[in-house]
Image (cartoon, rainbow, N blue to C red; front, side, top):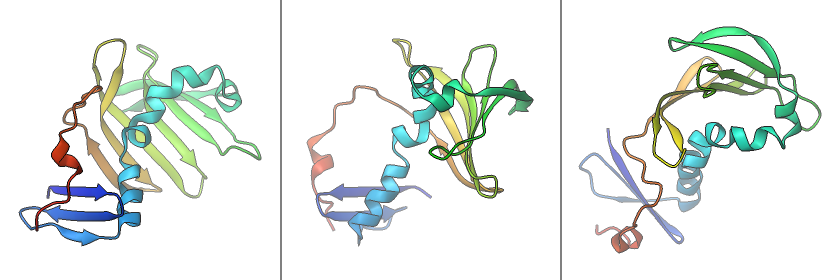
Length: 164
């Protein structure tokens, strides 16, 4: 079912399907929307290249075998963690060096993100358009990017409360 969310200042509304918008708790809406932001959803694949030379935990990744991820043969890289950083697991496609999977969190409660359907948006920006997220063994989110405009024009009416 499709939905639309408005978050303007200290007010929030949610409309699902063809139903009219209903007021929501703006703090909870903001937290939920931030979880789906491009930085949260596809941030790791976009930032990995720049961060690899600066972040000690990424410099200490070690080869930890091979694995097939969604039909793509990948090299598994791992970092065991330390007092400041938790364990990290990556699956990297050795053909194009794209991140196909990240595993963060604890062994008892890992968060696994799988990235697929990479598309070239120009200017060297290659982005996954399909992301699946598991918390433990349970699939919790499937994100399918339909369109991504890296320099959008935002209409003025996006910043007005919905009519009820």
